[in-house]
Length: 196
Figure 1 (cartoon, helix red, strand yellow):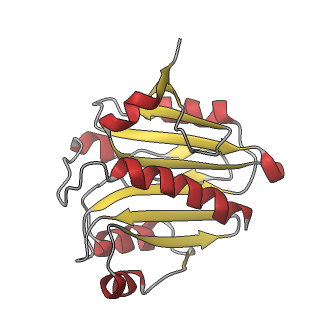
Figure 2 (cartoon, rainbow, N blue to C red):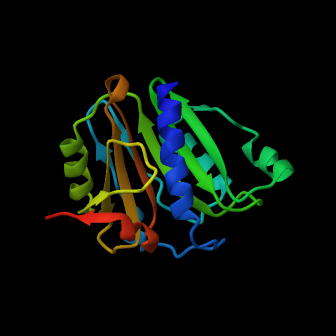
């Protein structure tokens, strides 16, 4: 339950930032950024899906290839969204203490805006930072969103400055964390306390 609350807070924050420009066709990052990014933390290996603007079918193919034993928690998410309407909708997969969420921006099943990998277990933030930097991301500083309940939210940018990664951590209940990726949202930079 704690992980669900943590990821809900993380997704709420990124929904506001990812949706600040309501485009169905966001700018795609350079193809080099999307090849071979692997965050290897030993027992946790994240192969982030970075093809923003992609369709639900693309995401499902990626999950089948990279996370075949994860459970699709809301297989009818697109159908439910189409019936209810709204600005965005999400697809959620789980396994053990982990959750992968995808946020989409249109009713046709396309326009992936964000992907978030969350875990209800303690983690070494320096270890994640090292892995992000090994994959070409640079640490920019701490994001201080007004209504975000994470103990810390670190911002990283891809080498070509087109993708932002947010590493959030909650110490309560033994530690939970999430690592989310989205196209760079200039709006987020107003909340940035730059690294020294």
